[in-house]
Length: 151
Image (cartoon, rainbow, N blue to C red; front, side, top):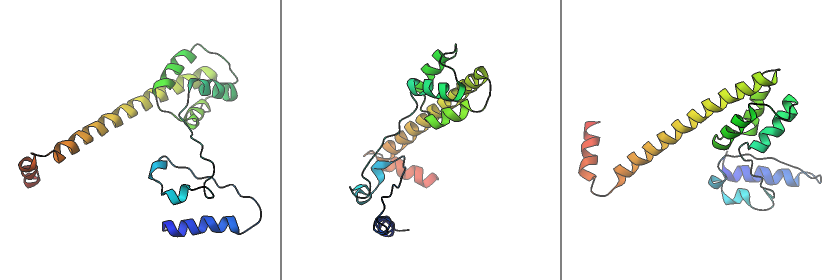
């Protein structure tokens, strides 16, 4: 599918019927989308869906577990502040167990795993950026040629 074909398809949906239509597009990288796709008339409302917050967690715990407070809330709220977890991921963890204590313990375990994954991904990104910077710096041509020759 080309961008032109996709835009024609979207525009065709708007003109195919007199009824109002709501189409939901999602992306993790809005900055990478073509401006033609984001223009008013195609996408009129943009809603940023953030990662879960302590307030969001409490609402999810109330909705899914029927509890307003628990001894594990403090630790979970601290993790939620530092770990990038979506509300959907948190809700999924809360639904795994019927007993609130077990669900919250499971969520803590999930958040620790997510924290480790995020830290590893950041470290990998920093390492990759460092390698790319080293390769692209002026004065490293002979060093780069040696690396290429030994590969």
